[in-house]
Image (cartoon, rainbow, N blue to C red):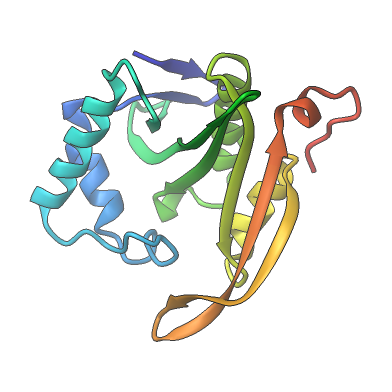
Length: 188
């Protein structure tokens, strides 16, 4: 089981006891507004997603690293972060980072703190050579997190994703392991 600790957080593989926290998060339309999967309205769907994450964490050929974000101070499930391997190259994996937390924890630097820890794990222990991430252009909070993590904007796709009944622009960011390890690497 993967467990990463930061100053304020425990980032770990999911457990069956995370169901209520996960359902509370994924059923919140504010928290889920920009997520491609959309709001989960039935506890059974959240349970299915949780079982998949737990099963994947036990896989010998793991491709999905979905973690719970736990508040160290109170032990509460406050969000989720992780990455999924999209392809393997001779240099290592190319993976996509994703994250979301309960609105009560927004604007506190929690996702940035968790993201830094997950990037460190992915690049040092997870055989990841490049991490990508993306968001709708109007989701400036998510874009700012990618920037704070030291990721570089690689593309702006015009009218690329159907969302809320209309086509919207999508942004793509990336960070290579070599750039993350470079002496001049800085986070905003």
